[in-house]
Structure formats: C-alpha cells, structure tokens
Image (cartoon, rainbow, N blue to C red; front, side, top):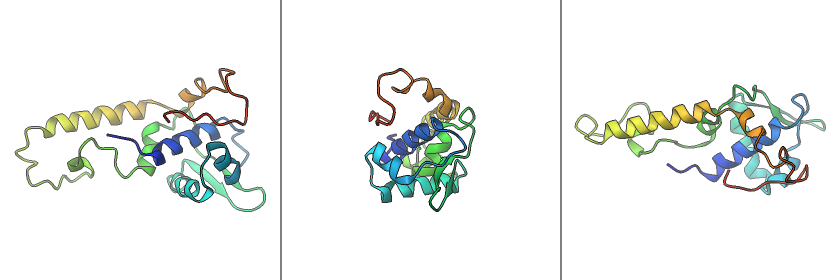
Length: 152
C-alpha cells in the first residue's frame, strides 16, 4: 500500500487547519502557498474533504476553509478514505464485494484481509490532534507561516 500525494497533502492541510482558530476560514490561496501546491489541485482535495464533512467551505471575501470536525475525533483513516482511490493492500480488496473469481479458493486472501484490517484499525486510531504536538511549529523549529514539507 502506498499513500498518494493527494492523501499526504490532504493530511498536511488538515493538520494546518487544525492549528488555526476553528471559527475562522483560511483562504485557499494561503493554504496553497504554504503547501507549495497549485490552487486548482488543492481545491479538488479540499472539495472531497468538504463533501465528506471534515471541512467547511465558504465563498466570498471572508470565505475559505476551516475544520468541521473535532481534531480529537477525526482520524487519518477518515481523511485518507475521502481522497484516496483505495487504501487496500491488494486490488481484490478495493471494494466490499471481492470480485476476484479465485476469492473462494485463494490461500493468500486471509493474510491480505488481516493486513487490510490492521491498516484500517491503526489509521483509524491516529487522530488529527496527535499531530499537533509533533509539528515543527509546536516544537519551535519552524517559524509560523512557513511550510514543513516532509513525508506527509
């Protein structure tokens, strides 16, 4: 399993927004500049998060995006499942109904199912607020307003 750039950017932006005042909208342009992304690309990611009710979006002069979830309850799994095509370790587990014609005789399927369950359970246990303690800003290593580009 590999998380795409879309998933990593979604998580980074969610962490960024969790650091802001929960009642204030942050402009798309500000988020895009901070993350070094095109506004159009980021808008697609944010749109999925709005449709999934993790973010709220508002148009107009005072518009932008803000968290619409509690960082202590919002999980990495929730975020990734909204923006990733699949987080399954193998293609046959991409959807609930396994369409593989060998599923009933596959000796490896139980291993992949268990791995998929472990991944989901782990990512569901990691909440957005856990990242807030680990940001470079929280540790005083990056000046506020600067982006921290890492493996996320």
